[in-house]
Amino acid sequence: MENRRAFLRFLTRRLASVDAAEDVLQEFYAKALSKAGQIRGSESIVAWLARLLRTTLADHYRARERRMRHEGHFAREAARFVNPTEKEVNSFACECLHGLLPTLRTDYAEILRRIDLAGEDRGEIGASLGLTMNNLTVRLHRARQALRAALMQSCKTCPVHGFLQCGCDLPIRKLATSAAM
Image (cartoon, rainbow, N blue to C red; front, top):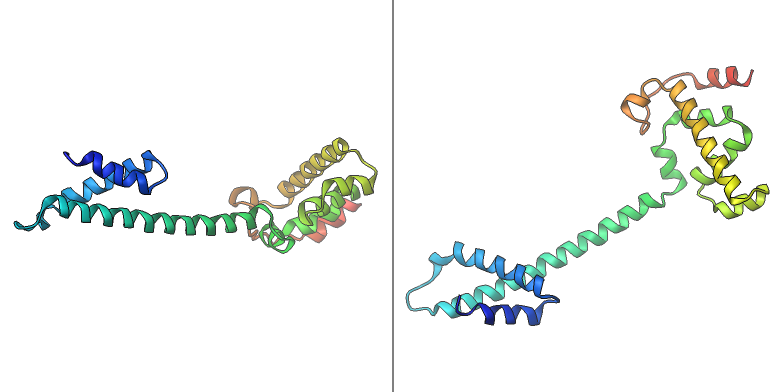
């Protein structure tokens, strides 16, 4: 405890914050207590603690580097799901979705295909359809509600087990033809 300030000063100079230095110091104390039996009689305790402090700091750097690599990998993977490709969206979506789109109003189906499946820019879609952004948002909301209702009506197992990787084998073509009549 007499050398606590010196150890903390050593760590603070090497780490970005006092809080990080305190965390490493706590790790150091835990290691020192667990390895106290390794001290040899002729060895200086302060020298042994200094070596242990340096290895604890090195362990901290290695762990931080590992964590940063994993966070970078996670960020790249998360970005894929934030902006998935059309192929990825189509592979995750219930297969019934593709069969039910033609049963919706034509403008609803087009908006859903362009925004949700193709990922087109809403501003461009609104301009091409002659809609204001508010009107486009309302139509998209209504289209999603209509699709949700159609999915709930046609997919009896999906609401229970989820719409991902749908196992429905319902004859969608029959539903589509009956809806068109």
